[in-house]
Length: 419
Image (cartoon, rainbow, N blue to C red; front, side, top):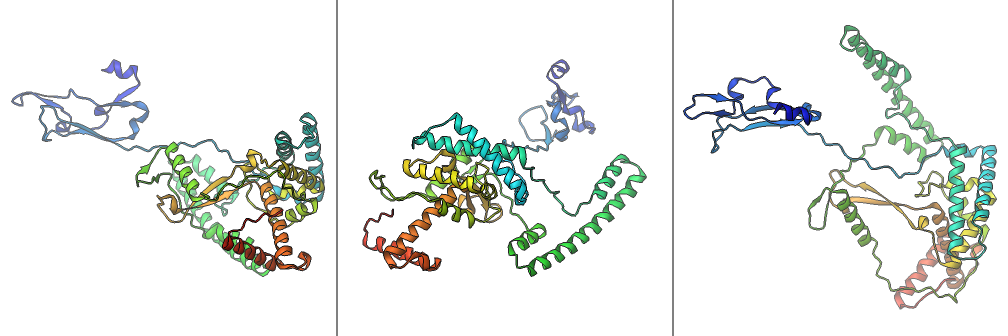
């Protein structure tokens, strides 16, 4: 047995704990003449520290002359972490610098033109749409790597100072001595003072921001020290109420739930090739991009609003060409059609899919196109239904007109085509 354990790197747990003799023997002869320890439990040496106790139970009511040997193992399972597919976060606040913004736009333009020369096609087809989008995405991504600094991760505790970290390093050197206790008291005192100073500064900062009428930044500051995040557990229930533990089953269940949630029962609406509307104008795209908020989360392409705005006239020109190619070919690249669902639990210990709030992160290029299309449709509705000039119409009136047109279509079941 010793040879077997040495060969397989195992440890005999029965011999690791000091026990009274009655907790050691595992077999007694008929008539209780002799008692011997002949049964052993072995475990991989890598996990022997997880065993908290191991002993025999001689008075157990079992039909055998052997006493059961029981050990208690404290198992701590490690959650497997999948490789993150998140796009790298860059410090886009640097693009507010006009000089850097100009260099950024020129660099993206040069990279884009080089890539388009390699994959040059002038025909309006699916291949051309993919080439334009891939070239733009690659040019922006490579320029971000070379010109924009990575966003710095803040400490988990904003009140931690460098002096406290240095004291912690010094305290670690004297572990097990009297000086360790002295340094530990000093570290605790510094932490209490730093927390109080940070809290006072945060309150002062929130008051100053509130005077500037900036609720977004004020909310961000309040959330830093008051937010209580609800931690979600990975396992969920299926339709039968059974708990799912495997990753593949959980992903499959979420796919079924999302498909059911966004199921659309409308009939087919085949694309009619003879219906051709007006092309998307560069001015419409520029206006839509101008009104988009900064700081919005980007899709899987990693391109956010600040990057698109920094491209200036060149970006408007490329996006207009891309949108018109997608419009004329009725084809959208896969990256632009792919959305990321973020799951936020509504309550602690959420188990059902309905206990989560789903947030969709889609490409901001698609968002710009959708905004342009919505504005065009609303303008057409205002002109056709209300009979007024869209230039003198407020956004509220335009929205009400669009809703009125939708109500009429639903009520009388008449097909409507907006060009």
